[in-house]
Image (cartoon, rainbow, N blue to C red):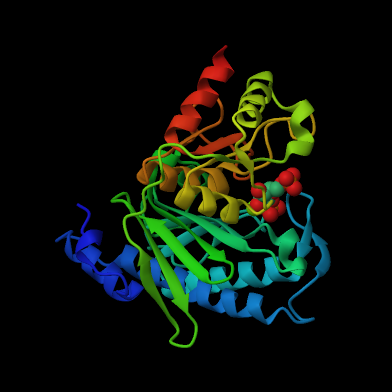
Length: 329
Ligand code: AHM
Ligand code: MG
């Protein structure tokens, strides 16, 4: 059921979540609380990002599990989201880009798992370019009373009960789905509230923008190279921020395609299946778009490791179909 159209622009996120919950008579309210916890952490991280002072900007001198330099804000965002999820009580276990192992919250009876990239694109932070948080939510498979397990976390994307992202840009936006369409909320800092600003988002079936790191083109698979040549022939616009949430968000609203394929440098692509590709794939599909690794639907992929990477081609449906054709030629 999708009652978003019945709720006017300007509805607060809290009211929206509550009204959605009322559509499901047996809903316990736990997922609603979890979404509110994420929104709380988003407000705090938004404040830290806009502050951008010497306590928050720059590297911290350590590397994350991927071997990438950790920014101070990576660490701050990770702490803020973990704290909100732990205190909220609805999540037993978290997978984070910033932590090699599972993070157990101590809420062993909680039934949800969250996979998240607390601050994606953070290498852009010191040049004031938009960054984002990405999250996917799963119901645990194991019984409560114990910490979540690897099996609980390595579920297919189709098993997500909700997914979303927060874009910290000119304004801060939270966009999420629970499988009943996609809705976007804009944060009003002076009131401390997210308000519904983009109800029932639908991605245009086709667009004229493509987003990829063209410096890697000679290493892309041939099908992708040929598709890129097609985009250039068609005089599509190249639009690449290098911040996945921002590139995805633009394409979601205007129509377009984002791809980060496998290359010689990144043999299985760069982006992470659990907390980058799966949540955005769920949102793309709910908005009428598609997401593939070039061959297989992202949401059908069976994860085998917490931090595994996979190629991503995501966006407007007709553009993805075109890529699929080029990949099979
Ligand atoms: P991160 O999770 O370390 O921030 O890396 C993911 C980011 C995406 O936001 C972005 O689309 C991509 O990496 C950019 O990669 P590249 O610089 O290779 O084009
Ligand atoms: Mg990331």
